[in-house]
Length: 178
Image (cartoon, rainbow, N blue to C red; front, side, top):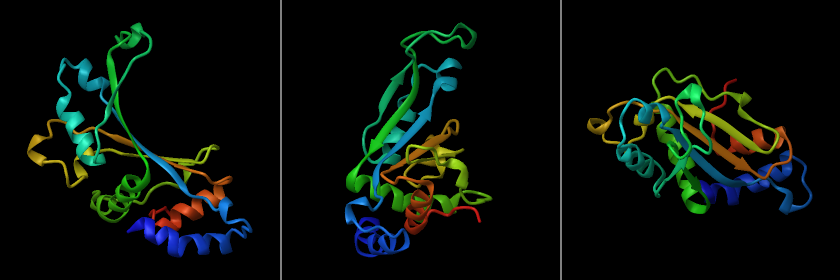
């Protein structure tokens, strides 16, 4: 399990590699957020997006929430209060289980997989990347997929700089491009 590997192997390795004296400063994962944009699906006339909610809930292992538009944008034919996305926040054991499944099972299943980019880091300790097809997850019944939707994944860490973020995620097994 990834959490046990983190506690037993990665914490001492990170402490040595990053030259950290205080064990509380070692970077760790805070949360993983999954987002699915459904506005194009809703705009095309499909008012029922319960299948997408079910798919995201199966992927994450917990119920997702619907995100609504905060204000109207006439150029996009968007009105305030219309559903635009689905979101799930994973913490604790669910977060580690999802990342283990993502790294070891799901990403290798992507057709023509070319690794994940190193450019997804921001200044707050987040790593963002996207998956073009949500149907690559094993939990999704292939007969139920009407249209493939993208999935945006954000991994939030407590690291202070990009070197520490990169080292933490590399030790976890993220397949970064060389």
